[in-house]
Picture 1 (cartoon, helix red, strand yellow):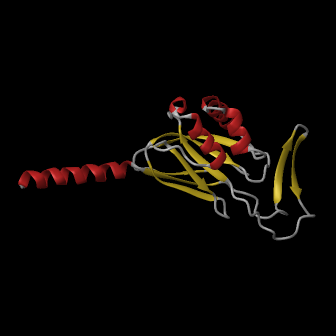
Picture 2 (spheres, one colour):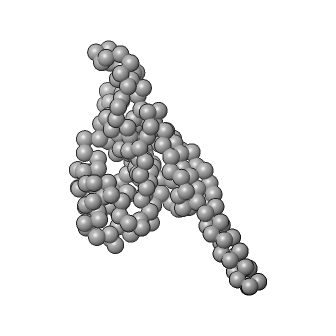
Length: 185
């Protein structure tokens, strides 16, 4: 009986240690507050500030940014084509895969809780189709991510569509609560 109690205690301690190894990732995507909101635009000729006076005042955006958290070491080759199709077209995450999904709230905040420690891609899909300012590391992360995806054309068609896709690489350590700022929409 004493051995069973010790074994049970060790099992519970191991489970608690594994649970503590998970972390969380939170952040904001900073969408414009209203359609008349001030927006910074960049182009070939330079940059400027725009104020949309023709839009109805105080009308909030109803669409929310989608955020996908995808482990960088995922073996996409092992996924059946039907699972990939369901993920892209119906947002059904393939079973037992390190892929997580969140939708930003009205303030642009999102959270992933109890996520295993690993290296991840944070993939942000802008609901409004606006150009997202990306720095060089975000552009390189996007290019790297797209090269790994199976049927990347289908990903662009069904997941991204008319929206903009920004990718950021992050590392989550055991027990860490990571707060990120993945850009402006």
